[in-house]
Length: 379
Image (cartoon, rainbow, N blue to C red; front, side, top):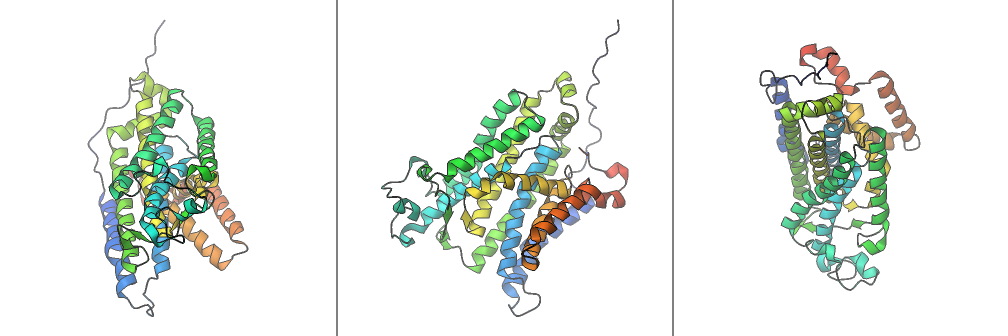
């Protein structure tokens, strides 16, 4: 009786370039917009000019870029590894809460009660800071915790989930349960996270007032540069041998195991990387928006991240970024133009994309602009 051996993974071909000429063009265009165009239109052009970019527009763009980081992180775990997470909102919120704790400590005695404690703690008659606020007055520690807190939670959760070989819809349900449990925990006043109201009324960061135009622009530029850096990192990952193994796990995990690779290590590592990206996005989001509360952990928020990736085109990297801007830009416009009917318009938009653009916006555009040999690997 003959034995059929599993087909080995294909050997890597010629080394591919990290960025194609068109990708370099797009990258420089994005950097030019973030570093030159937007600051110039907002700070240098007079407010009465037709070319002036308002502070609201800058804040909205900065907020959407934070969302785009989450969509990019979702694409790494879903589009390239085949793992649909419905709980990435918890990592985004954790990064936001870590930054929010630092910003609350920066208020000092400028709060309503004139106390070193945050106002909500004074209102609840707390006498001292909880233990988990011990490092909240250090900016360096805050930056470290923005990475460590989401990363550690993702590592612990992912290790047990992936080791148990939970996958498919079961994994999606468990991640949704994770974010829902975290939301309920943060709603409780005794946990020391502001309860239902969360954190708000931020005054300054590193001693510099947040409300100044220069600080708002600095946060916008930092957010844009971080998004570009995450995109380059993600592209390097998916075009490396590591990325090819991730795509092989997405397409045939059992065969990957037969060829000698351990899917657990690859799935766990990309899961942690995507969680950290969401945590950094949350940390940049909070000082620009001015509030963080448990609503960011709601299951609907995590589902929206998956929608951005699907609308833009998962498995393309640039698609989720486009999807985040498209969906949130449409939401902002619909809420102003049709405040009573914007949910119906948005729902119709999602249905239309699902029916007529199954590969997302970027997939639709690439179908007519690129030859088959240049197509990205599709899920």
